[in-house]
Length: 315
Image (tube, rainbow, N blue to C red; front, side, top):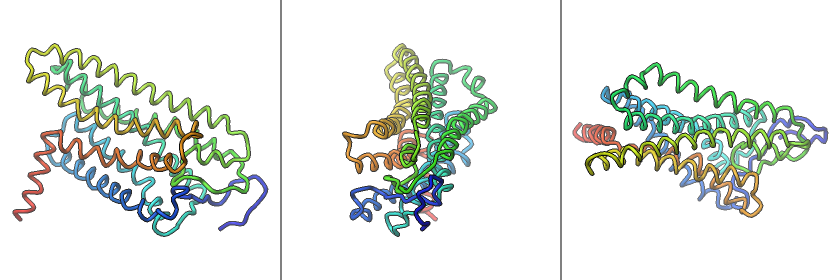
């Protein structure tokens, strides 16, 4: 460990505490987190494999689902290995550059995930409200461009957070009260004014979430108007079932995400260990939950999974 230096500079490394106040329970906390990570990684890998190998699933909805699966794997892998190393091996130290890289991946792919939710909502809107032109409007080149725009947006919006942190001087306190390098948790250790970091973080959060949620809500408002005008009850149930899994996935992501976002800035009434646990669940529950929901609720994927495991049992 580097020696303490009173001169403001970048520390060679930070110390991550894991879950502050629950250090004695780290081994027990790690078990469900490890289980969620394994389920998330395997579940999303299976989703990607099925979509790649099943030609009938080469459609816009499943291309966006593939993007979501990759994003979920990156998000959960960005934090889980280091977090489990803290819980199991007391490997609390993380290099300054590694901390910035982890922070970039966490925030960039969180932004990417919310963008993919918007793209999936638009896909459902076109499929239900304008089904005859669905394949024309959302052609393969258009889908690729949408994916690139979502990723580039995340990179362009989150990169300044890393540069803003890199320009800050840090003093003797190197202990991050968190299990991964979250932007505001790191910024609080600086011995300089961090108002620019705080304001920019708020602006990015409100821009990304505000923009995406607004258009997701508008898309589903239009979808519901069309659905309730369908002539038969069976058609309405089928259309609502198609959107139901997407709505569940969106809520599983945004509820803990918003809780984490606001408690980092107005956290005085929330116990720190509660905030840290929810912040970890925010990066593990949706990646675990998404393949389960789509595997159960999407008939094509559900049947393909059953066929795959049935074939393995026969062999």
